[in-house]
Image (tube, rainbow, N blue to C red; front, side, top):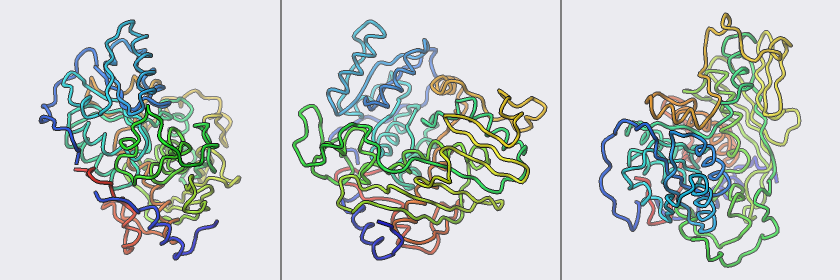
Length: 439
C-alpha cells in the first residue's frame, strides 16, 4: 500500500515501536577498560558475527601477515564452528577461540581490534562496549538501527580514541574514488542535483522465503540472545539469517541496507561527510504491518542540502538509476559497481585525475581491510571513519521517518534534531527489551 496518510503512519509507528524499555549489559561482570596502548607490529583481531558478511570480512583480514585472528563469536553454533574452522585452517593450528558471548571476547586484553558484522539491531550495543574496552573497530553499515544509536557509537568511539572503519568499501574502489574527485574538484561545475539509486523490494538472500511460519528455533541458535534488545517475536526462519533485513524489528529494508554504500559515495563527492540535509520528504509503499517481511518495497526521498543541492534517494523508480549520479552546471558523472559514465568522455578514459586537476585530493585506498590495519598503526583516520558513516546514513533514517509519519521533516544537521515535530522525533530512537540498555 502507499503510505502518505498520517493516521496510517501513526498506527505503523506504534507497531514498529512496540517492545520493551531501554538497555545494561546483563549477567556478565567485566573489569574496567585498560588505557589505550600503542598498536603492536602484529594486530590481534577478534571476529564478532560469523555469518555470510562476517566470514567474508574475516577472510579479507586473514591475507595480511601483520594481522592475527585469534577469536570468533556468534550465537549460532554452526556459524561459529564454520568460521573457526576457516581461521584455524588458514593458520594450520587450533588457536582461534570460539565465544558465545561477545563481552567475553571483548574482555580479552590481548585483542587490539574487532570486526563486527551482526544484524543492525545489535550494532550499537556491541560497538559501544567494544569502544569502552578500547578496541579499534571495523563495523558494518548502516552504522546502527536508529540515529540515537548512531550518536551513541560516535560518542563512544570518540571518547575512547578508537580507530573506526565502516564496511562502506566502495570508497576503496578506484572508479568511485575517481568519480568523487571529479565532482569535488569542480569539473562538473556547481552541483545542482544528486541521484542515488538503491534496490527495491525484498531479496531472498537467505533462501528462506518458503519458511514464513512460526516454528521452534533450531538447537544451534540461541534465539533469545539473537533477538537481543529488540521485541521478542515468535521464531520464523524467514526473518533470521540474512533475511533479518526485511523486518523493522531487526533491520531497515533495502533503503537502510544500501544507504551506507551509494549515499556514502554521494556525500563523498559533495563534501558532505560532516553535514546533512535540512529538509526531507519521503514516500513509500509498505506490506501490511503484520507481514513477516514488513520493510518498504518502493520508496522515494527528496532532500535539500546546503548550497542549493537537491538529492533524490529512490528504490523502485526506473528513472533513478542504480548507483550515484551528480549533475552540475557544466556536466555530470554517474558511477556504480557495474560502470562509470560521464558527460566528458575523457573522464571515462582516465584511471585517476591528473595531479594538476587534483586540487582536492581524497584519500586513496585500494584495500579496505588494509586501510583499517594501517590506521590502527598510524592512529590516523580510516577512509570511512565513524562520523562519516553517521552522516552517510542519516538521510536514510530521516527518509524512513518521513515515510512513517507521512509528512516532510525539517532537520537541524548541527544539533541533530528534528524541528517542531515531537511525533517524528520519537522515531529517532527505539525501545529496548529488558534487561538490555545502551549505557
